[in-house]
Amino acid sequence: MTPPQSWLALPEWRPKNFRWWILALVFLGTTLNYLDRMVMGVLAPGLQVQYHISDRQYGFIQGAFALSYAFGQLFSGRVLDQIGTRIGYALALIGWSIAAMLHAIVAGPWGFGIMRGLLGISESPAFPAAAKAVAEWFPRRERAFAFGFINAGTNMGAILSAAIVPWLAATYGWQWAFIGTGALGFIVLVMWVPIYRKPDEHPRVSVAELAHIHSDPPESPIRPRWLTLLSCRQAWAFAMGKFLTDSMWWFYMSWFPKFLNKEYKLDLLHIGLPLVMIYVISDLGSVGGGWLSSSLIKRGATVNRARKTALFVCAMGVVPIIFAYKISGVWSAVLLLGLVTASHQGFSSNLFTIVSDMFPRQAVASVAGFGGTWGYFGASMFQVMVGYVVEKQQNYTVPFVCAGLAYLVAFGVIHALAPRLESAKLEPNMK
Image 1 (spheres, helix red, strand yellow):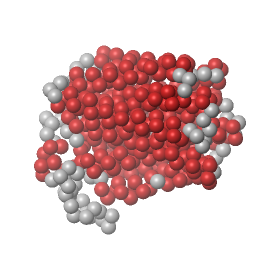
Image 2 (cartoon, helix red, strand yellow):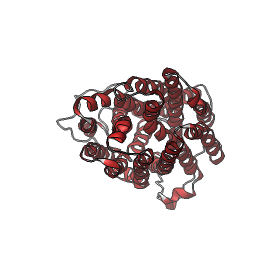
Image 3 (cartoon, helix red, strand yellow):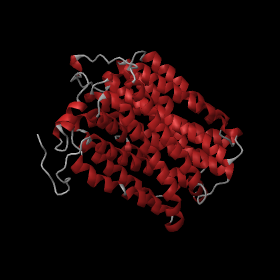
Image 4 (cartoon, helix red, strand yellow):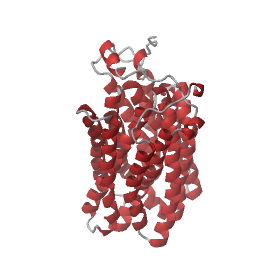
């Protein structure tokens, strides 16, 4: 059924590959999602001094975001599978944009902690929705590259935060850094609602492209209950991968600006370029990690071999962070941290893609939400631990060692639970 056209609808045109336009739109939403969550990390050194926030309290503030994000994903993936990607993502956009702007009216550890919690729960549907959009619009052989492109949006959000947040805060005050970045979400909203549809319902999709999108073998129509996933080892493979690596990624997002400030004396006006360089490098890893497994599949490798090869290569790329505390020059540190974040993004792109390798489209958002819950449970615990350790030891040695080993452990767990990345067996009574 063709949806009615609105005054915001696109002109009557039908590009050859409309799915890439959809991907660009999801990329833009992901960019703003990460821009909003990164503002606090960039402003943290100054806010800690201004409001007497200790490292331990800062760990709890960021832990509040991760914990609320985890609880949000308990139900966000399931809700998305029920109400659809279009409406679910639009509601999330409205919610997290407002929550980001509300940071401007609070002060102190409790105020920021409450707002981070509100932001976390409202942002929680974003990645399950992105995974569902990729599953709806791309055949299996293109999904790793497509999700790698979306994952690059997280880096673009980080780049924009490093580029514009210091300027906004220095020019207009820290409150306007939250207001200005949060308001951008409404721009994406007015594009998302009229443009996004499922491929079968979209007037811009050609018959040839629709056939390409549906070129995979038929999938099961079963949609599992969230609790059913507790007995599914494929779901646990994804969840434990997220548990071990999401905690590290949020550590990078929240603490790298503080690390550069502490170790290299980079203040708000001088930290922007190093952070931009770190996340530009990480963009290469995001797209490159997805390209690697997709390229191997096109060359004849099995899905299992391609995904596992890419996961292992990226896991090894994070190991050098163990030696970050020995780096003396700021730009040497930037290159190392860039390699680490690039490797994480490549790992993450393939980790998200194995969900659509093992589950039907109807279950992708539920499984992504299930894994995201565990990922951010791990992130909340790690944030609090880092706060205690950094405040007590006044260095980042322990967190860096944890990060260096976490991805290899995650790879081992994924391989043990899903040795062949076979499709999950879902019983008919799980509808």
